[in-house]
Amino acid sequence: MPKEGATTTRRILLVVNPASRRGDHASTAALDAFRVAGVECDAVLTRSPGHGGELAGALAARYDLVFTLGGDGTAMEVVGALVGSNIPVGILPGGTGNLMARALGIPLDIRRAIRALLAGRPVPIDLGCLTTDAGVCRHFAFAAGVGADASMVANTSDAFKRHAGVLAYVVSGAGAILRRQSFRVRATVDGEIVERDATGVMVANVGRVLDGLVTLGPGIVPDDGRLDLCVYSGGRMADALRVGLRLVRGDFRPDPCVLFRAGRRFRIETIPARPVQADGELLGSTPFEVTVVPGAARLLKPIAHVSPIV
Image (cartoon, rainbow, N blue to C red; front, top):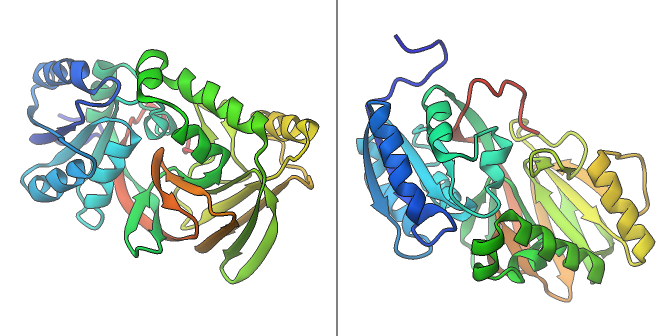
């Protein structure tokens, strides 16, 4: 008999990105763990960006669950392709940051992650739909942004990520923050216009980063039907350090260098134009628009991790 809340599973589709940091060699461990669990699993390999979504869209209807093994980009390709399908997705940590796996309380060890997810339950998660001027919607589960976070993604080489893992993002992100490259942002949130100088702008769906080491803003949760605009300024080194320390401490008292707005529709414009990232993938440049899609994804979550992801 399955445990209360556990998922009854017959067949699983595993979408593997062999180019991700751990995807290639971890796929053997994943298939072995599914076999030990007595679960039938078929693995398919992605060949190029976007291929994970194509595979999931074409094959998922034949399976009870879909698992991803790659980075956050691979996970979101699959999740985005399955919006509206009601098929639960299990995210295995095969990339560099593994932001969503960490936010969901999924163990970073592949075998432990599979055991936890097979005994877990699907939970509804809001998604953001980011639309550039090209008119294409890109779903994201964690956050989209410009400034320091996009520079971090752009300036972290694949070789550095393979060798250093999440430390590569920490080093690159620290460098982006210390450079304090400022730009003018005009953000429209549900019709309200906010303009100011900024070093980083994020539209966030999940508040906690890297197992709670950093909190992006107050009350950011992925199941409230809203997203949260976070604008960080800091032209002086003292400002940048103060803002960084407050994010580590979760201290969101009023500060002239931070601004937060919750909403459902966002438009972000910058002068000059800046690169845009969503869940660690570069997606062109500003301007861009974001709308929330409430409860659009069903993601597997370990039942042992009972506290809500924030």
